[in-house]
Image (tube, rainbow, N blue to C red; front, side, top):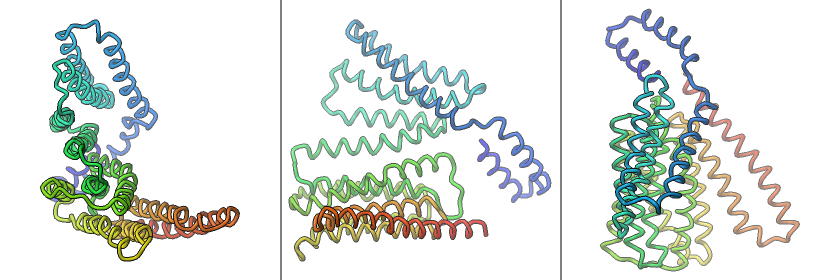
Length: 384
């Protein structure tokens, strides 16, 4: 709400509806009263755990008495849970907004349980990704009505989970690692699109901050999955089903690009760079392994280090410190992984441990010094 009135006040001032002196007094008044209505992080933590334990307790109660309930009672119970959570949130919305958000989130989570329990009642388990699709649609509808960040997070998680489920069902009779390349590439590019949700010179709203944090949590794991998939495909060789592969690659590239275009509007150029980096990554590793024996892993680590440096440079160009931190973390992890994989096994036990200590101390000091310098540069540029 604070971001909403501040943005509107800025627009009114620019349009001449409110003069500068009135706008200054409004901001001073709202700032002085903001601390009284702002919830500290322990309260938010308690609300989050409260919503989780409430949902878990209800599901445990239902599962304990599930066999004794009739099919009609079961469907009434699972649909009633969703209604009770959302109705309770609506009742206390004005008196306790934070609790209302938590209950609405519990209701959206309970919707997924209701969908799969209803599928079990009516024996609709043939195509399990369909439940994720219905859950994502329900969360999207709740998000359109409520404009709350938990629903944004649920849609950002459930929609890709549905597509992942569809892809796994489509390739369930295949056992080749190359069939996972579109999946790994798409997850990496989508996590990257979430992480780059904020444009240069703009203050992200709550929904964009939610996507940035979600992208920050998932991007390292998506990068690791992409690296493993690219290297395993070099070992086991290619296996292509042209129609299925084309659909997979079009979805893996097109969906994250569409998300990035929506989030960044006219500035999706970082997504194009990440797309080119990821596609070359999965192709360069097997190509290097064929041209130069045992060179695939070296190319993998070098390309990862280049990508980490590019992430840090994006942070500098767009004045985003979290991107510099992410780039530094991925670069450091790449250096340590390269040492364990290519250097440590060629040395003796004592020499390898000494080398590891030198890499950790000297490399950590150098990376941290560079990171602090870049973050300071970003803060100076932002202040000016």
